[in-house]
Amino acid sequence: MSQQRGQSNKSSSSFHFIAGLGSGVFGAVLLQPFDLLKTRVQQQSGPHSIRSAIRDIARSPNAIAAFWRGTVPSALRTGMGSAIYFTTLNTIRQQASTLTTTAPSSSSSTSHDRHRPSSSALPKLSNTTNLLSGAFARAFAGFILMPLTVIKVRYESSMYSYRSVIGAARDIYRTDRVPGFFAGFGATAMRDAPYAGLYVVSYEQFKKRLGHLYGPDPSSASSHVSGASMTSSVSATINFSSGALAGATCSFISNPFDAVKTRIQLQPHVYRNMFHACQMMVTQEGIRSLYDGLALRMTRKAISSALAWMLYEELIRRAESTLRRDISGHV
View (tube, one colour):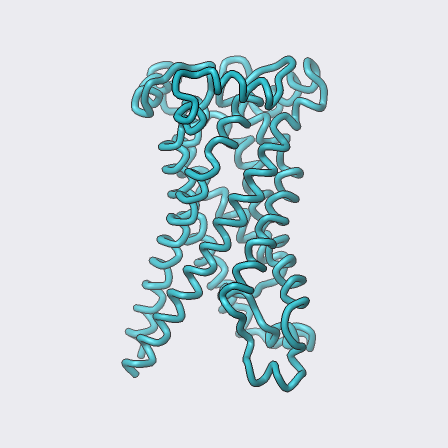
């Protein structure tokens, strides 16, 4: 029995890694034009707009390829980042869930919610636990993937004429050595950790609210017959909507850190650190510069988060359902 449990945990971690990798790569490739435009809009001071950035890219000899410039480093970074993030997040949340379930239930409302139909196969935790687990998992993944992030931003920018990802990496190492690959990590961590923590909290709350709109009350007779489960189409719709709402909300809150991070990564010799960059941007260009690329980032984050979490949750639901059947068949 203990051997089966260990195999289940190991398989579960593999499922989370593969599900995160697949959902991250899919979203990165599909939405790369939004990321490219955001980088172009944020890269310089002075008047700049989405429309002018689109015109500049469209004038390229191969316009379609130009809009997907930087797809390889973006897919690598987002795919591996999602895989590491979801695996780390799952490990933390599973441990927290184990500690929580050993404690006595504190309220009848918690038990009441636990029997409602659910769109998720993931553990249900408190807001504080979701906030901390999301923030730590994202900061950890961000640090590991930071070199790819810097290469991606440089490669997307019109300030550098890199012909390949390898060429970009060589130039960064030649000019800035190893620290160059971690330029802007402070701003990135300040953007990603609170974003991810708030995102997990918002995502779970939106799922809970939308889930309450679906299905019978757990005290009704029909709920006892059907159980606390939803059809795949309904759960996917709830997870997609929750991901989009949470992504748009948290993108607005964290956009200033994203704008500062982009400037540091593109011009590390001009913007020395996060506070210096923020001061220069606000002094020279006004507070509005901290919200450059907001519409693009909100749109991209809303869609990418919705796709990533919907695909991730559906893959996990199916994988764990298959795993449970296999284990029960061997008992």
